[in-house]
Length: 332
Ligand code: SD4
Image (cartoon, rainbow, N blue to C red; front, side, top):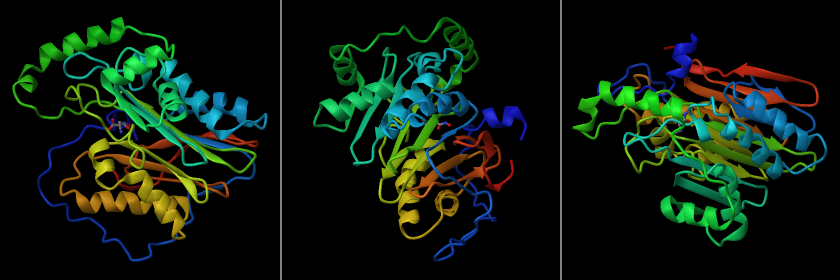
């Protein structure tokens, strides 16, 4: 798929006409094994091209026998710190009011989880999510409360949007005045990072972090900070993460659904495919409604699937490091 299409991953059309090509879900599903990879040893996978650099950082921990939890945090911190990345962390795009609000969550092998949403001006949301998990009795903090907690914990402050993003925002605002008159969702480029790891001890963890949709309504949370939607880990079964239109992913509790499908015997790819098919069955208009899932199971099998072509993921093992194009339901 051409690059502009990939980057336009989240351009969504309005919900309207019924799409005829929806395949009914087959009870039990099809166990299609193609596109699937079985890995021995530690393993890390993550969404999109930016996953390559994140995987390398995670690998520094996994290859030394470290914990999956440490690996997933270290991995996505690379993406969060990348000022050239417009969809995650410091370089993220703002909401409609010009605020960069960050969402992240993390989950480990003991089903401990932490999440942060609508966080502004703090450099590493994934580490804030981990601190919420480890230092509080809560799972999720949002907005000013999350920021207060992060500052108390000594997290670094950042000034966002960074200058080139601010310039882009000003231009966008001038060209999209009518969007301010009605609370319609605007769908711009977006590529979240979800990263899943299996360590040498056989334990799974996952992390997910994003700046969400560019020019979203102020206050909007997507799937990425929601445990069960953007990310889910069950150490007995597997782990899954999501990218794409967060609202559609939340509607089917996407990542949890993928893990539950694996629990019922589906391979990671099949579980991702069935979750995508469920999204398709719940939405009347799929015009540009892109969502993708990435999953690994306890045995090191990897799978992914998306509504439209163009979703890819990065994979790193003892033997290889590569980008893989995910199979999909339909072409743009
Ligand atoms: C969101 N799911 O905020 C995120 C965006 C994303 O690839 O994943 N883009 O809805």
